[in-house]
Image 1 (cartoon, rainbow, N blue to C red):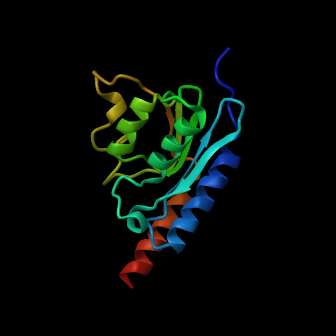
Image 2: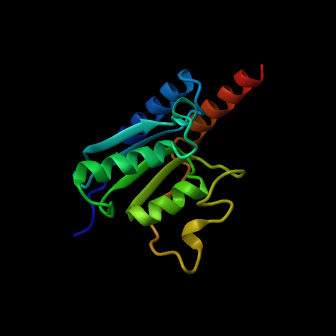
Length: 155
């Protein structure tokens, strides 16, 4: 049977909108959306690290936490996480514990990523759970958001 595959374009649109909203709040522009098994939006968020003075307030962490509260359980194996940037090691490790079924991300993060770069959390031999991952979805658009944000901050 398997998990229903929601349309990535729709959920990446939501994630990109959340990233743009985060930038307007002065946050690093990363956005996320969590798709449920029937293609419903379970949660959406943008980074709130600065606003909440919480280094764990990444978009991915917020949507995983919100979805488990909504569903009354900690497992999200039938869900897909859409995020504009390759998850960092903290978010990748959390995705393991939330048992996320699939992760679709935009821009790759050679400096801070934890999926295709850095510790490659899911590739570790003792990793408890390995979500399916798809990277590079709307990579140019997501990367441009980040580059523009940091160029503006430096100016």
